[in-house]
Amino acid sequence: MTIPATGRWRAWLCALLLCALSSTLAACGGPRVEANPALWRIEDEAGRTAGWLFGTVHALPADVDWRREGLKRVIADAGMLVVEVRALDDTAAIAGAMAALGRTEGLPPLSRRIPARDRPALAALFERADIEPGAFRDVETWAAALSVSSALSREAGNDSGAGTDRALLDAFDGRPVAGLETAGEQLAIFDRLDEDAQLALLRSMWEAPDDDGAMLDAWMRGDAATLTRILEQGLAADADLRTALLVNRNRRWITQIEPLLSDGRRPLIAVGAGHMGGADGLIAMLRARGWRVVRAD
Image (tube, rainbow, N blue to C red):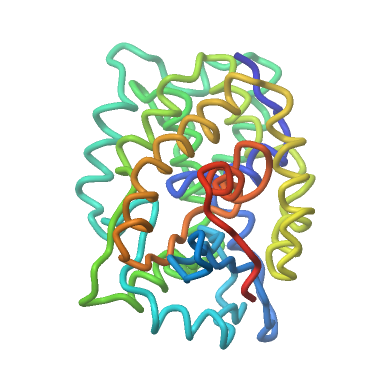
């Protein structure tokens, strides 16, 4: 399996995986900025509201105000919240999953097992993130890449709680919340990548970003078509990766989402924005099952 070794990989991964790379999108700052992200209403055959869809960004500048009045009303009216991962604050469980999946005894330090041409860039990255040169012994390449991303985010002073997911979980405190998968299940997607794909993921840490800003701008404008186009371009390079990150997960999720709609639970379904559009997106899957999905923002 090969993956696009560019900043595009980092950008669209942020829109697909909650436990993915977040340093670039979270690094923005400046004056308070208003956003109007896309919101959809799900209706049954009789035109009654059955639920809502909201595409989240898992890492967001803290100065972005995305809570528009329409979304606030939906939060108040919804019967429950559905997110990718419910236990975002269970750091022990996430760390345990990372340790179980991301460690292989006998692996040399990361700097000794990557190609020689990549070592200067890795050394500069380690210095920037304040990581020891001999780090990541016994740690698989994908896990090292995620750890470096986390270190870079901390080094930049980013607020890990600025993503929309955490804010929505806070808004539904004391009300029903369901998770579609666990952090361990998300990390297992990386663990199944071959070494070439993992190395490409690592290289994305130092290669110039292509679409990070464009994706964030599209999300803030509620431009779902542009966001879907950027994501599909990034995933087009590898059908297997697209299936693993997008298609299979959406198929699993829809089997959990549809009963909630049918049972009158009126859920607000808030998952990565990359899961919404396209032929294999949640919107298309819901429509294929007879639900009407319309913009509500």
